[in-house]
Image 1 (cartoon, rainbow, N blue to C red):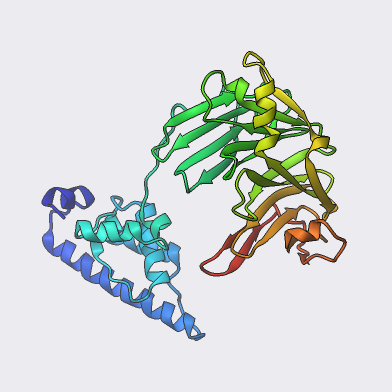
Image 2: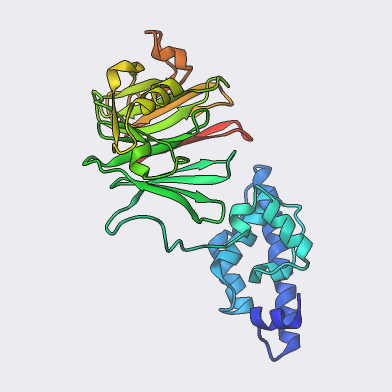
Length: 351
């Protein structure tokens, strides 16, 4: 850390006062770590130093120059790793060497808490009074797909620059989007339609969109189910307001052959939904608000605000039969869920 950085993070005219503050800080950290160790052993801790007390003490020692997010990152670090190497300058958001800073940024467990960077996207490809409804990450291509409520589909690169965008002239709102890895196209759903967008084609974007309709129920969410590495074929999972989970299979023949028969000047190409293979099963008694295919477990998950059939987690073949599914009941239902492969746990969120 340079002298200039030191002056920026802390200003004290009395060097002795600063040294005393550092000693008290070291005592505070040692006491906090000792209490955390006692908690993990199941021992009773008297006058526990929680985050609020820790933060107030830091402000007393170093003054208002300390930022709350830096203190919170430091507190989380010593709470999660009691043997972690720490330095007083981390309280101010600085690291001793560039190597330490880089290591902290590359540490997947601490990345969220130790790196405090935000970037405002000024050109998000969204119209006025419109909102982003869904974001899908495509790690194999290192870009993001976003869908706005009023029909704007956009692809960003890893630097959050727009690669391509299109507007879907549909009266229904978009409710979700994802990426089809085999067909290499973007899929989005509205209340009654499925949209397949060939983002790579040149020319007018409207010439490269296919609309599959009508759907029996209002579609609320969508994801891709990567069942196999079979080329030119993708499976799409969707949840609707009837409590059904739908599995629709699309192939390159459904779009490539039909596209060659239509003139280039035509706009959106509408396809009959009855010509597509659609397997569905009613799994919830309320809206299906999220579906997700967990490739690690080779199964799908769906959640609903239904208090009885709140979360379903089972194999895709359960959509084709009447065998009871693995489900969980949670009061007032589940709004969202995700799976962590490293910890092998599923986390749910509800009201």
